[in-house]
Length: 493
Image (cartoon, rainbow, N blue to C red):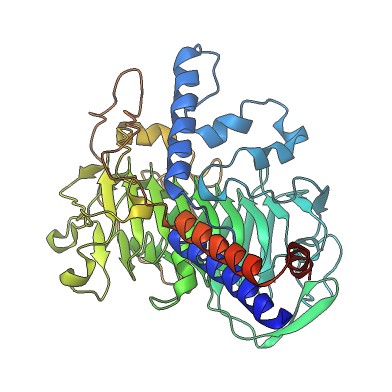
């Protein structure tokens, strides 16, 4: 009979694919099977950019050592070649194309009067289109959203050269889409809204429930890059990435005046978020922040070369066994003696989190800050996460000097002001402590002191063995019971 053989063939293929995914810890389609290779690539690009800067004449070089900025800012004609930015990403979100392969769309109208039939020339009209678009702005704009802005696939919002502020109801929603770049815009004072119909594409209008009031909300999204944005004063999170979102880079951005800054992961029990992979690089976590920089549930989070000015509760928190790889950051603790710890295992006893893979390497601790690592027995899929020891925190000022929207003031100045707004959201008014520390770990030659290689045991190749065994069983069964021609016919069904 054909039916039993067909069933066995289908079962073998299904079991083999499930075994292979389990062995590689793959839970999402855009997840990298070897996150440590992505980490190494980030460090190689950092080293290369710093080396080029040091080899160039200081008077003629525009380079800062920041590999993202140096990729495009040294081109005096960057404004005529804006889409080159899409080739400058790093980390897990480096493949985000945005609207690189599409037309330039110019926003000429800052209004947002109709969320069902948006006006051509508005930002909303551009982001809902089906085709790839690189969206720029004709002038400085304050865009007050009537409801959440639902962004379609393959879009770039590029605010370079303009002062672009996005505020109001809902703010930016990136839901079940991919290849989004959000660059050089202010996002602030975002409030909950909804319970209304909103257009998400030229052919679809749907009823939306009430949004949380996040600055940027990612929901089941992939290949997302947020770069050089300034975020503050939102009702819920400044950036949330949940429900299977992955392949994300958040870089060169400035966060301030907020309580729950960044949430990565939906729920401790939501297994697909185990495949979430996020790079957080060259950001400045600045004035009046409280917690969640980020707060992680599951996944692999690479936190590299960021400047944490202060916090009120903790900087990095998590639950559900996320992997936290903290490298080359500067953590400046607040004056409060009870809030010196960088890390927090949320609602979890020590006997449960002691084997979680939380690493600190090359970080500088200022004003009594301390990071509590865990996970001496590293799991096979992340066995190399501790093999790279960057000594780069002494370069934090240089790497984060332009964090946020270009031209924005820093913590030691008057701060960012938004005319017509006075605080709000969940931001606080506490003034953080001063920044200190020095670059004692600058290193010579290899400016990050990279160490490639590991004494950890190699990952087991159990998936290959399982797959081969299943294939052998399948061949033996079909050979014993049917002719070769029949087997061929079965395979072509």
